[in-house]
Amino acid sequence: MIAAAVSALLLGACSGGDAGETASPSAEETSSSASPSASESESESSAPAETGEAGGLIAVITPSNSNVFFKAEADAAVAAAEELGYEAQADSHDDDPNKQSELIDSAISNGAVAIILDNAGADVTVGAVQKATDAGIPVFLIDREINETGIAVSQIVANNSQGAGLVGESFAAAMEGEGDYIELLGRETDTNAAVRSDAYHAVLDQFEGLSMVAQETANWDQQEAFTKVQTLLQANPGVKGIIAGNDTMALGAVAAVDAAGLTGQVIVAGFDGSPDAVQAIKDGKMLATGLQPAVQIAQLAVEQADAYIRTGETGQPEKQSIDCVLLDATNVDRYTSFALEG
Image (cartoon, rainbow, N blue to C red; front, side):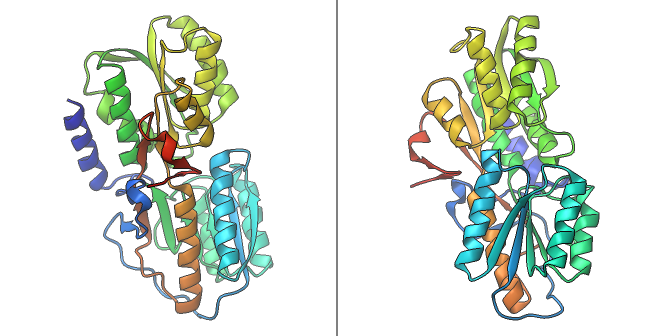
C-alpha cells in the first residue's frame, strides 16, 4: 500500500500544479548530482539587456536567520558569490512583505547586479520581483516559488512534494498503517506549507486505519508548536504520531511529547533536514525528516546569476527542482549541514 501511495504521489507531482509543487527538485541525496532538471516545459531564461564581467554586489535576501535553514542558505549564497568575485550582502525580510520590498528597494539603490531571494509570499512577492526586474536587476528565487513566471530569471526549489512523500511513507510505516495522529501546518502564505501537507495526505489518506484527529497551524514556529501540541495531547490522549511541515515545528512537538512523558510512544516526523532534527533522530526522539538541499540550491542560484551576468543566459529553464532525501536512523551519520555525504 505504501509503494502504491508513493507512486500516486510522484505521478501527481509530475503533472504540475500550484507554484511550489512543480516537478521534482533534483535528487537531494539523490540530489547530490549538480545539474537541476526542469520542473515544467519552460524555455531557458532570456538574455538581459547587457552582459559583462563578474563583479559587483549580489544582494541575498531570506527569511530570518534565527532559523538554521535560512541561515545555511544565506551563508552558502554569500560564500559562493564571494568565491566568484562578487561582493555579497545578506539581509532578512523576516517574512514581512513590506520589509522585503524595502530591502529590494535598497538593493536597487545600491546598484546590485543580482538578487538571490527566498521570498516572503508567493503572491505578495510578484510585484517586488517585477520592480527589481524593471530596474534591470535579475532575480533568482530559492526555496520558495512565486505565483508568476517570466519575471524572475530562475526559481530553484527543493522538490517538496517528492520529499514530503518520502516522509509520509516513513511515517505510515512506523505507524503500521493505523492509529490517531496530529498534523502541524506551516505558514499559510508559504506555498511549501500546502505542498508538503498535500503530499503527506497523498500517502496517509490511503490508509483507512490512520485517523487525523487534529490539524493545527504552528506557522513554522517551535514555541507555537510546543504550546499547541501540549494542548492537543491532553485533548487526544490516544495520539500515536505527529507529522509536521518543518523541523522547527517537529522539534516543538518533540519537546511537548517529552514534557508529557510520552517519548518513545508518540512518533514525530518533520521536514527540512536541520541539524537539531538530525540530533533528535540520533537520540531516538524523532523518526525522520525530509532533507532539503538548501546549500546546493543557494549555490546553484549564485552560479546561475554569475552565468547570466557574464553571458546573458543561465542555460537552465526558469523553474528547476532538486530532489529531497529521507533522513532517518539508517543514514544520519552521513549528514553534514543540509547535505548528505557519500
